Image (cartoon, rainbow, N blue to C red; front, side, top):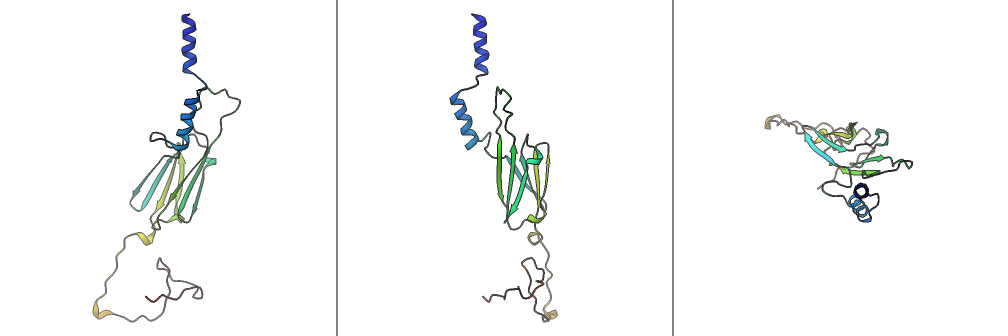
Length: 174
């Protein structure tokens, strides 16, 4: 009888199907919890003229990572391969499949110079602050030194001149 009780305890510890436990796990995977979010956990901070973002993606093959940038939206996609069907799983608690997360970036970041690195299960993005958003000094002229403008120039938002005058828009009078 004692041997039978011991086997029952072992069987209970490795219970393969429990509908309530499976429902609870499914709900956590879809909705997430504070301890285990449904998406990719991330940290973000600013360090000088750069923003840093780190995503935890343990067990993800670097070849499955996909990073897209469109209209100041960074989309990170990763895939954790499904469990080999030949395995007899005793526990399968790690979420599998495709994970995706989007970050909306402000206009003051330079999305053209983002760098990405994946090491030890952490995807790191470094996003530089755009030149137009950095603080700058403006020289103040003296009243007696005013000079007339000799030419009409059309410039872009960042201050560089427009090369093709035909595509330039006329200034709006307020």
